[in-house]
Length: 94
Image 1 (cartoon, rainbow, N blue to C red):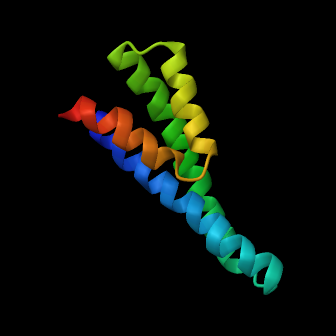
Image 2 (image 1 turned 180 degrees about the horizontal axis):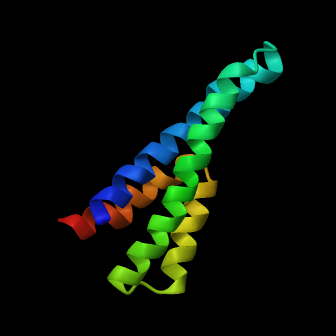
């Protein structure tokens, strides 16, 4: 479960950066909205999967609400999921 969550965290972080780094500039600066639609769908799915898996991993590992809050807030901050993966998830997998 932790490996799946780690992979989802990385993919969610990438989709977040793509959305804000490519999708939004194309939509608002170049008036090309199509890439934003597809990147947005992918990011939305990955975000929901990340939150659900965060809940499941917290239950499985018996992590407290504080740890879930860290995981959740990291999903809202650019590069946050990469930080969580390196600081919290990788050491658990070792």
